[in-house]
Image (tube, rainbow, N blue to C red; front, side, top):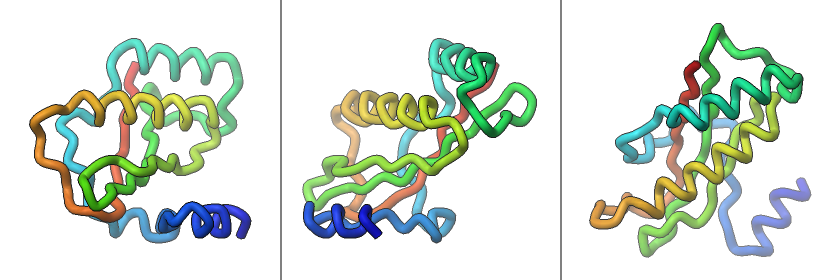
Amino acid sequence: MIALLAAALQGLTPPPVASWRDLPVFPLSRTTAPDEGSAFVKAEIAAGRCSVPPEGSDLVAPIAILVGPTGAIRQIVPQAIGCPTVEQYTVGYLMTLTRAAPGSTPPRAGWYSLAIEYHW
């Protein structure tokens, strides 16, 4: 409830958490994290900072992305996967990745989904 109020005060639409699967996929050519990202995730799991174990040597971090009317990323929201440090790392990784895509055509305004995969 507080998150909805905060989003309303900021003029942002809250992420459609219940229907992330129905969102169009954000157009990004790379959805597998680089080796250093996967090493970070592996270390977080080994340190016990994740309450949900990965499937084998993979971890998937689902994300909702809000694109504004100008095509700029307005918000990136991680889905809870039981590993807050990885969730926030994924947000930072995507912020960097989406800023470093000059010349690409931005998608239309609205919410999109994306899943970043970590492998080791």
